[in-house]
Image (cartoon, rainbow, N blue to C red):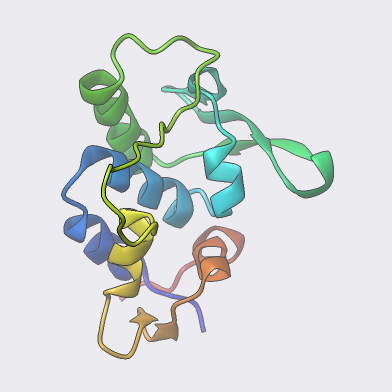
Amino acid sequence: MVPRWTAVETILGRCWKLRDGAVVALLGYGGLRRSEVVALDVGDYDADFGLRRVKGKGGYEAAVALPEVARTILDEYLERERPAARFDEPLFLVRYKKWAGSGRCAAWTAIESGSSSRTWGGVPASPSLTRMPSAMRAQHD
């Protein structure tokens, strides 16, 4: 079963921070793995296309077109939270808290909080689930 686009939109609505929304947009609309998201640099993003270069498993590199909705989310994130970022800097910075806490990414927490049964659009939530909407056409309502 493939999650519906409405599930991606619901999860985006749960993201309070622009950074988390940008991560979810890349996972849901781009079909990227978490490791691919954290490997992105600012220069890998093109506002008119999507991602110029995604470093995948086994050193494989590919361009990934993103829909306008995902590019809009990334544009807003870069404009408001990373306006002075150089092209060779990481797209997403890690900010560590001084106190011990859950080390989980807030974006992944938003995905997991989709329901008490940990499903995303009726599909059990898992890290590889976010690749499904891009790899296969998501079901429309």
